[in-house]
Image (tube, rainbow, N blue to C red; front, side, top):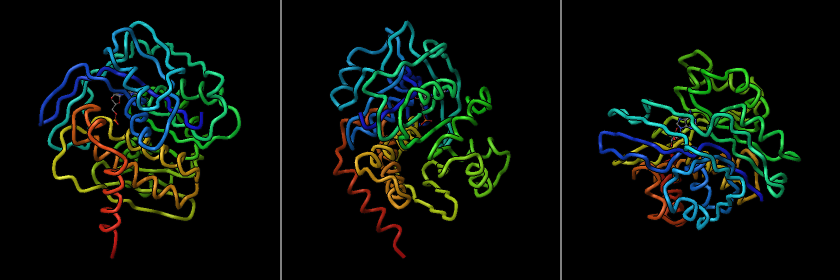
Length: 298
Ligand code: AMP
């Protein structure tokens, strides 16, 4: 297995100014693995309960997502969130950890050697347990969110220090480094140990920090978006999916991967939940890639 993707599987209740849905399939590993599946197969590491909607596992397998690393328990993780007109920030109304509590991932043997790992948003203790079972030195991308910044700051810093790339959104970067300035936050992120830091700015793109360089990627200009849930996870999944497919983990390819990640995230925002997944093909992603090239020309 070349690519591993870890994170939560959730049942989400989501409310945005454009509608609401209840108990829909979500979670960081779902959004990320679906985004990566446009570029190639991956192995999923997560836990879900018997209340998972029927057809979920078949849908994932059909997209080349291997489920040997999926554990089944009693009750699926649940999250409920809402958005105001500023759709860049979700307000968490409820988090029920359920099966996530005490999750002790065991990596199947054929997952232990891989080229790349995405430690999606999940408890940093779980992220560390996965990392300790991976052999060799795969390219490691880590994502997190405010819930874990607040509840597990020490463990989280250990994961960040071992990562090649840390992906974080702008609000969380300000929170983690106690600064309003994203340039300062980006530099402080690098000081924790990763080779690259990426600060996501919602619909307005992302900033890439490395030791000597800085890159600013625009977001794809969407006039209509319905639900940004999962955009951050889709960004990370699209990014690592592209890096793994091209087998090129250089800084210049990471810039292209950021653009691909942003584009998959833009499609994700156009539908509630994972609804976009059957509507688009890799060619649609490529069309937006060319459009972004035009936007950046000056
Ligand atoms: P995003 O909008 O990319 O930040 O991700 C939204 C997804 O993250 C939803 O599908 C939730 O189920 C999931 N989620 C919410 N809270 C957490 C949490 N504390 N840890 C991991 N995943 C979460």
